[in-house]
Structure formats: C-alpha cells, structure tokens
Image 1 (cartoon, helix red, strand yellow):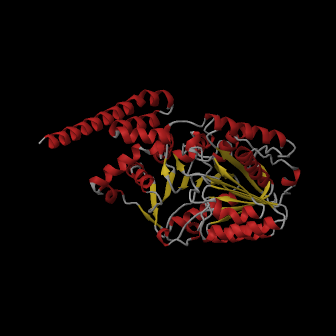
Image 2 (cartoon, helix red, strand yellow):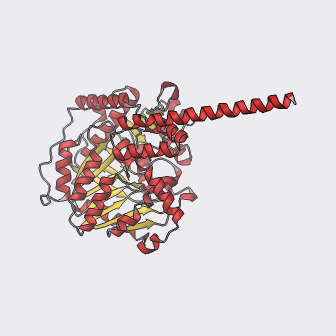
Image 3 (cartoon, helix red, strand yellow):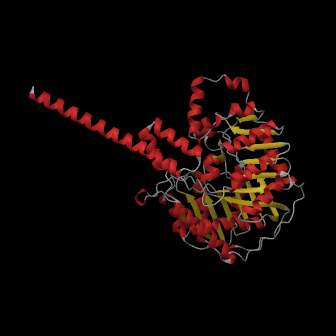
Amino acid sequence: MQGASDVSMASLSWTNLWALVLTLLELGSLALIPYVVFKKRQPVSATAWILFILLVPIVGAFFFLVFGVNRIEKRKGKRREAARHVSERLSFLAHPEVESLDVAAGCAGDHALRFLRALNEFPATRGNEVQLYSDVNTAYRMMLDAIDQARHHVHLEYYIYQPDGTGAELRDLLARKAREGVQVRLIYDAVGSLHLNRRFLQPLLDAGGRVSVFHPVLPWKRRWAVNFRTHRKITVVDGRIAFTGGANIGDEYRSRVRHFGQWRDTMMVVRGPAVRQLQHVFAQDWLFSTGEELTATALFPDPGMPGNTLVDVVPTGPDQEQEVLHELLLAVLAAAHSEILVETCYFVPPESLLVALKAAAHRGVRVMLALPSISAHRVPLLAAQSYYEELADCGVAIGLYRPGLLHSKLVVVDDSFALVGSPNLDYRSLLLNFEISVVFYDRPTIQRVRNMFHQDWAKCTPLELESWRRRPMYRKFLESVCRLAAPVL
C-alpha cells in the first residue's frame, strides 16, 4: 500500500509540476504582448500577433519569437552600407536622365516615372532590348546558351536553387565555365534554398566557383529570423545580357513536377543599359553577403543601346527607408483610368492596396485579377480566398488559373505602365523581402505584357460570386483565420 501511495504522490507531483510549467509559459506568452505593441509599428501586424498569442498562447509566443522579433536592424544597416559603398564606387557609370515620356501628363506611367525619379536608386534608361517569355523552358535554354558563351563572368542570385536535375545541369555548366577561367559567383537564399548543401555544390567549388548564402540562419549566433530574404532572380553574363523575372532554379519551374502541372511564369531577357543596373544590384548583395567588392570596370562594360525600350529597374527591400514598391503600386492604381490587370501567385495585400483596387473598380476602372487555383503553400491560398467575395462584390473580375500553378507576377495599368519581376502582391514581397522589378512605359512592351495576361486569363475559370458565397461555413472560417495571419505570412 505504501508503494502505491508513493507512486500516486509522485504522479501527482509531476502533474503539479507540468501544470506549473504550462502556467508560467502561458504567463510568459502574455507578457510578450506589451513588447508586440511597442515594437510593431504596423497596426494590422501588431493586432495579428496579439490575437495569435491570445488564442494560442504558447504556440503563438514561439512563432512570434521565431518570425516576429526584429533581430535584423544591424543587418539592415550593413546592407544599406553595402549599397551606399557600391554606388559610390560605381559613380563612373553613365545613366543618362530621361526627361519625359511620350504619354499624357497625369497618367499612371507619368506618376510612376516621377515617383521613381524621387525614390528609386536608379534612373530610368532608354536603349534597352527586352524579350518577354511565358515559357520558362525557352528562357532557361537561352540562359544556358548565354552562360555557355560567357568569356569573363557569370553572376547568379536566386531565392530557390533546388538540388535536382535542373539544379545539377546548371551547376555542371557553371563548373565547366569556372574551369575555363570564367568568374562564377552564386548567391542563394538560406531559407528558400533550404535543401541546397555544400556536397551538392562541391563540383562548382572545386572548379573555382564562388558561392554565398544570403543571410544564413544561424541559431547559435542568434540569427534565426526567417525574414530579410532575397527573393530576387537575377543572372548576369559578361555584363552584357541579363535574365530576371519570377522563376527560380528547379524542376518545378520547368513543369517537370507532376503535382504542380503546367508551371506558368514570366521571365525576361534584357540587353542594354538596364543590365548594368541589374549587375549593380548583384554587386550590392555580393558585398553584403561576402565582404568582397565587385566594382571593377571589366564587370561593367558599355552595354550599348541595342533597342528602344525605356525601363526602370526597381530593387526594393526591407533596408530601404521608404516602402518603395508598396507606394509605387498605390500611386499607379490611384492614377488608373480604364484598366488594371494583376497576375500574382500570392495575393495577400495590405489593406491600403485592397482599398485601392476596390476604389478603382467603384469608379469604373476594369480590374481583373488572375490568381492560382492551386498553391505550393496552403495557408496563403486560403488567406487570398478570404478577399474574393468583397472584391467581386465591388465588380473586380477574378479568374482562377487551371492548367497548373500560376507563379507569374505582373501588373498592367492602362497603356502607360507595366511591371514584371519577382514580387507578389503580399506583405512579404512588399515589406519584408528583397525583390527586383522592371517597369515599362512604352506601349509596344506594355501591350506584350497585356497579351500575356489575356492568354492566361483565357485559361482561367471566372469566379462566380453567387456560387462562391455558397461555399461551406467551415471553409469561410479557415479563410478568415488564415487572413488574420496575412501580415506575418
């Protein structure tokens, strides 16, 4: 009997101990709320974190400590200093100022050019040749051909570099070029390329290629935030041709992964003065990642003026004092007269952009959103779906892409503005990631982007508002819960 009593007392003691531990953890979770209020300047973001902590105290606190705490102020300063240093050293580059556009004053393009003249790091440049591709395989083959012909250097920066067949093909080509004496430098993101490892990259390293991880996640150095990521996709070859857009390096982007079906992305090949600016962005990120300066004149040859396209290369990121991409989109949406076309993989917009889209529809602007019907990430898709009803109620047309995964990112406003690049229409792209966009002002290029949108729209199923309203209540609840997390997705 005594033994049974001792076991019972021990069990009770352990129960009391666990109860005490859980109580202390819950109290500690609640104690984070004043910190959230003090540190989070965006009311929506602060509210989302507070609700998460209140509803799921211990789990919410854990996620806030991992995802929400800003541990990167020093990193922002370092990235800012890298940008300033590279720009000073590259002051010899000539970027002739664009005085005017051949468009009406007050149109979206005029607003964008004036806005970017004030806040963008680079001036708009004329004389570019830009080829746009909706087929990633075509653009990828062109990139491999350009790398194969490289004589001096190849620079690559990608959010995702998969260690699969596509990744191995590119690695082996880069290794061969490195053995031939070509300077090869690769930046990949620590979170996006989580599966990439030194063993996979060893053939490139052994050949003399240089590899850098952007913002490594190092818990033992208290660097375990998942923000401050490079979501850019840039390849520059010999300083004369560049590739950028929405696709990363991996089999899925070439429609080789059955689960995703026919992958849809937008890529571009750039020649002309804009190549120097893309090289400039890479040099800033390389200095930030490695401490090595890339400002030799051989890396910035005169690209000539092979075309007549006017473009703005727009690098954006969390190290900037102003929310350049966010404010740019607000400016052009407010200036729209007849048409707004948006194609994005992740549609979780800040309230300001949501209101801008609804207001445009209310004043008679045709607003069309081409969005994915499937996603690699379930929570952002559910969060996006929570916006459909209120947008459709305002007259916004929503099309759900059916052949596969829609990963393309583009915006067209009237006949005077188009944006193509890496950013989605979500909090992460607008406020937390390093992104690269290319803005077009000339009607022929804008028309090509518009045609790409309408080709995709023809493969979309239009959202029927009345049918959508009849979706199950549990689904609406899940969408609303995921929407609460929108500022932290």
